[in-house]
Length: 288
Image 1 (cartoon, rainbow, N blue to C red):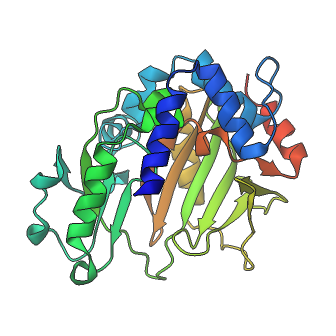
Image 2 (image 1 turned 135 degrees about the horizontal axis):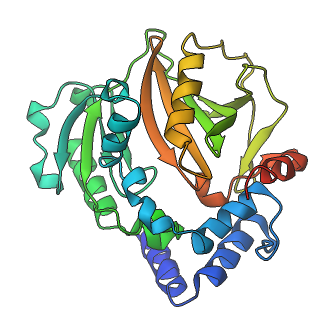
């Protein structure tokens, strides 16, 4: 409880500062140095500039976990959407008794607001309700200062639990610049000891890692097999990213079937650089 109070007080104090000052404060908190916002060269510094230079508020329809489904349906087809089990304005609307044994609950207005239920009999329902209420009352924009979340209505979506026959659901994240996927971040063991491999679109392993809050994500010890639907995912990522200067398009491959995950315009809120540092400069060249 004390941690929550301190967190809320911190972001309340930040609310009195300009967006540029908030970015500098948060950047220094993560990296112990100030960002170059006047002439940014690295990708993650340019992502910071999105927060005050681009008209990002109008991107709310693409980051809303429910509204984005309309864009996906119109752009590539609804067959790539995960099955929707419910949409709720408040926690009290959820009837857990009628939900299947496995499901996923997501808040529409932020990142990381997920409850993954693989066995309803083992789920602490009261705890899940409490957590969802806390998330619904949290203003994600005031925490992250990512303007695309500012106008998103807090709701809850319930989707089908995705399960691969190998019991190892892999997350494929396509970093796209002007409609062209540049590389793919592959997340393995996402909810345990997360590891990340990076590949080009020909599925050649790249010599790079990522780092968040001074925590370096190691590459997986075993190379991830090339998914059979890789070419399809590349094509779909092109179509979904075509109208944006930069966006990360996420997919799951479930038994070789492509399932849309989400669109992300400011990955990790711009606080996850790559290693070695030269990669940040090279990727920065791709973004005006």
